[in-house]
Image 1 (cartoon, rainbow, N blue to C red):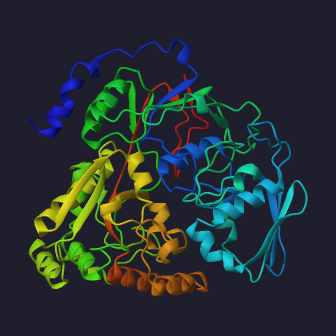
Image 2 (image 1 turned 180 degrees about the vertical axis):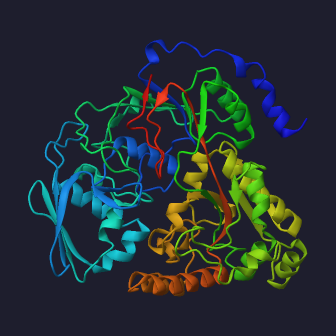
Image 3 (image 1 turned 30 degrees about the horizontal axis):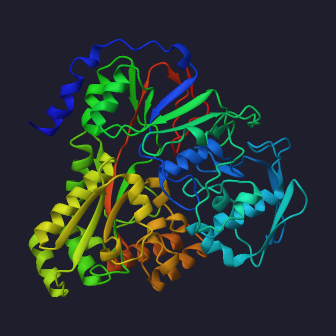
Length: 524
């Protein structure tokens, strides 16, 4: 039986079935999330599912609107000194944390400091920061060694947001996970109903004070219009689709592309693109351990990659559903280029085998960890597994759940002691548009994202981009960055696909945004 036929079988009768009565669930949004929530700490992990949780629980000092402009969120505004060496921010009155305590400038300062230790953007800017300190309960100030025009963009970015936590929690070391999810956002996390692998629940925070402006991207009024948001982990896509068409679930964040035609046939289900950007696939090497500490081995794998195989594995032949993008910056944006990307145009398994032999590969074990409960990333992983097998590498494919992968990828140990060789992930196009928050392009060794590439030239070019006086200069630096990335391969870009979401027709307020958020949504 073909894979698509197999997935369709359980839905043959369900498509025409009537929706179940909502009853007491009228103000509860029942969600099938993209993955299992195993970490509550949006600083400790970059997992998007944790960021989605964080947008429910926490608030930001400032946020990006749909045009990418930074607008005040928790703050009333800011004042920049004429010399650019000081910025003073003032909090809106009446903000409170979920435990009833007021939000103070001291909480913001502690949250900024913790976030800055892990955020790639803040790491680049931080040498220019002399001090960030509270002036009183509502005001805090940045003092700078030199002007930092990108400070607002760093604080208000969507990729790795600076969420505000109580000072007592934010004082936790940035490399240690927090367990206490107390924020000041529109919803409260319910720890007693959290069962990783099965369920997570948030309830409306009645004391949340939204901004009065209409929501615009992630800026403006984050209004909680639901009493509860319930996430149910359903790892089988056919079961998730069946729950959507029968009304047992209200929202499916990342439906499997194979099932989109079936969902679209149901009049009570809406299938639309909510995310503003395409979803970019990433193949990441562990560069601390053999064999991928060997540049020649990394380059051999890159020679075998054909992005089209990866994208079809995820999105099939969905019309306008995917596109190759053989550079490190988001296609269609100002910095997009393919300088030096010839290696990704090789697409030849025989040449890859020859390059692998020339690199001196001696049969070292390659452990590829794949998330069986995350269909899109799993599909990317399986294409790479096939390539490595055909190249003659000693592959061990480990199939696990996404939560376990997120925990395992922090290990720097050899594969014999629980480490890993290759993982895959995805990222929004917005996250890859600029060098300052391009997570996978950081190459600062132990402080880089999992895989820990170390290349001083990439870091030098990143700093040069920040100091570039105009767009033509920035483009030249971006070309040099792309060329260098294709030489040393901190990761392999796999192109992008469009990932729609699905929701029941009685769900309203599902606006387009650069991230999946649930405020301003309601049920009819």
